Structures are given as C-alpha cells and as structure tokens.
Image (cartoon, rainbow, N blue to C red; front, top):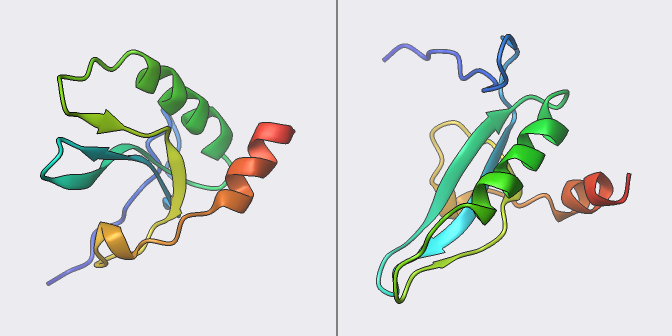
Length: 96
C-alpha cells in the first residue's frame, strides 16, 4: 500500500500536516474526535482559531457533548485515542 501525503488544510499551503485539530465528541454512547483541521506548524494558529469559531457555531442535540478544540500530534496509521494531546502548544498559542 503506497503512502499518500497528508497535507495541511490551510488554503494554498502544501506543507505536510503534523498536527490534528480536533475536539472530543460524544452522544452519550459513542465517543470520537471531531476533526476540524490537519495543520503544519506554520498554519497551526489560524487553523486553531478557525476551529474555535466553528465550535461555537455547532448545535448539539440532547445528550451530545463537544469539548473545545485541542491540538494533537498527527500519527499516521494510529488510532485517534492514541494521539498525544499538545496542551503545551494550546497554552502557548492562547497566551501569545
């Protein structure tokens, strides 16, 4: 199986994605990460800001939960629950 490139979602950016911007979602039974973007390091800040804006526009039904978007290290071939969350980057981007 050939490996295709996973690229940053920012318009015009063709850099490899190294981060997944996602939020934990649940309907009370199922849990998963809702993906907002895949990002390179350079486009991380604007894509995270866009994800936060999109999160505020989400309508949830009874029993659904959706946390704030976070930054996860992208791991090709790995499962979402095994992705390392980068709270250090989240804090750095919030305070700068």
